[in-house]
Amino acid sequence: MSESRTLSGVTLIMSGGSRGIGEAIAVRAARDGANVALLAKTTEPHPALPGTIHTAAAAIEEAGGHALPLVGDVRDDAFVADAVARTAEAFGGIDVVVNNASAIDLSRTEDLPMKKYDLMNDINCRGTFLLTKTALPWLRQSANPHVLTLSPPLALDPKWHTQHTAYTIAKFGMSLVTLGLAGELREDGIAVNSLWPRTAIDTAAVRNVVGADLVTHSRKPTIMADAAYEIIVRPASERTGAFLIDDDVLEEAGVTDFSVYLNGGAEEDLALDFWVEAKSS
Image (cartoon, rainbow, N blue to C red; front, side, top):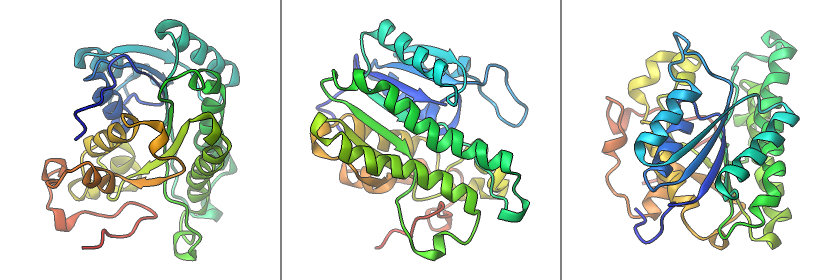
């Protein structure tokens, strides 16, 4: 893991983050003393979705960071503009945008209501574009500006597009934002990258949408948190426009033992996430 750099005093603004991977990324940054603004809607716990924006903020503070919980919808232009302004006012700027908010529905095309199609695209793709766009004036003033989006590597092989077409469109839309903005913002020195897990991750989405039987075939959210940390702690000039996989990032950082990320199962039994191949030996 990186030891020579730190996120102390760095300000992150994140969509979502009340639980799961987003919360894990926020808490990892907080351990360095980072400032973290969370944009999320969840104020009351749900029986199937534990965690709220307030419990996540408390975890950030407990880890040593400074939290700014901002309750609202990433689809709302006025809310996002206000959230960005409040974050910059509270912490003196914005250094990192983490596009974490995402909606999922794996229904086949004929079974998917258009309301769900619109929801996924509005949160996943439009929300990513909106939050990043709105934060750009502050990112341009940062000494080490990063945009990190939790979305998969782009690929046009038909095998990736024959299931859950609407969800694929929404997630690949997020990745197209990475591809486009990496080129558009290169001269501004803003790193724009995507991060995706090699395997299933034990999150509420896996437990409640993909299938609870995958829990022991998943890794813990901390693998994504540690990988995200390794990306945003490094100079923005080192890499942009990359579609990164969590265990590749950590191997590059010197990690050799991934057993700490197991979620009760065995390494050989891990289930691959969507749109990724098994790691070559």
